[in-house]
Length: 270
Image (cartoon, rainbow, N blue to C red):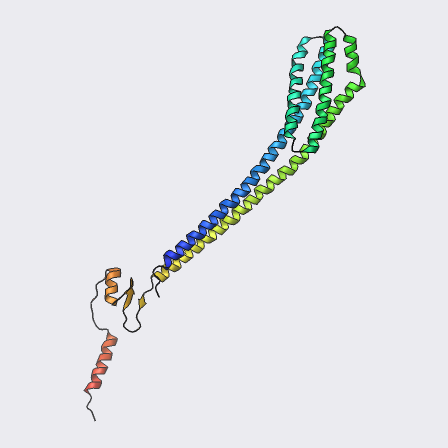
């Protein structure tokens, strides 16, 4: 039986197995990484929604403060912050409609808030125009009406409700992200262990192959040795394999057997 090629075969099998494991590792890591990136993007998306909602609420309050400051004092210095706040409210609400387009319930809330906000901004502009026209009392009366306060209260309530829902979504999405990351860690550890086992198996197979490679096949009848597909004498094998030259002698055991044989031949025949 020839075994000279067993070691390369075993090593090739081991390397192929490691390649399969590495391929599986890369595939699973890619899939899990993609899922984790998607979860992270959803978390970032929710945080952006919350920032936009908080900004709209803050700028509406600033616009209201600018309007009332101008009406009460008549100082034009209140108008520049007012204009900046109202412009930002409009742009932020437009951006919120785009960001929440994937969530119909949230989008409905934002559309309602946007309608109320635009109506409130129209009221702000009208009272400022009245103040500029010298109709101070009329502008103050509009500001003092309960309807004016109720609209602002509805805007704040709508923004806070939308923000609370985004907070619930954020918790769910953060949990999903944590689970994806934990799942990825488990996959990495499991596949790393599998890879380690495969490396150990390869080492064991290589050691086994080395053991078989060092076996010598002897002919049971002629005592010749199979070496590189050729049957040669043991002396020739030592010379080729180990560069060892041989000489001949006779062992004590063989010599005693020879003496016994000679003694037997010298006995007289009866």
